[in-house]
Image (cartoon, rainbow, N blue to C red; front, side, top):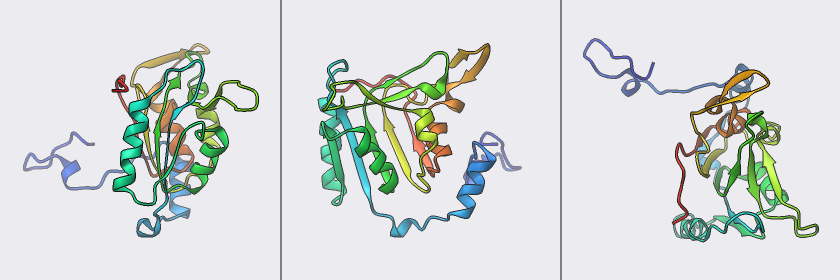
Length: 193
């Protein structure tokens, strides 16, 4: 539809607002829960998780910190404050969610792709949140910005004898199923600098 032209040769996308529904249930949830954008002001930025296994992302953290000058009420949670509980709290509260972190891929099941969080301070174990867990959240009306390498990659995955497109079964899909209004992800690797 985006590439279709009208009789004058103009793209239809210039004439009409575009909305993609990844599922009927997501569309129904959106219709039942209208969002009044002018009343939504909570912005949470999470990034640069503290982890023994994953490299530090100081420039991602610096970028999130610079957002404070643009967004006065920004709730910034970086390094050790970027925990699973802070992620879950942010998804419940935030109108805008900014994430700058690493992610992992599961070649057999895209629903098991994970966002890297700070290591658990009590156990020292790695901490993640999977696409499957994100699907179960209520993020109705939220806007998600996922700054992570190839987080919206169009390449395919093979699992259980089936071929999946990461675009359909990856992070964008998970956040949209959770009720996010829109998700901005990267199609390419991102250098921290």
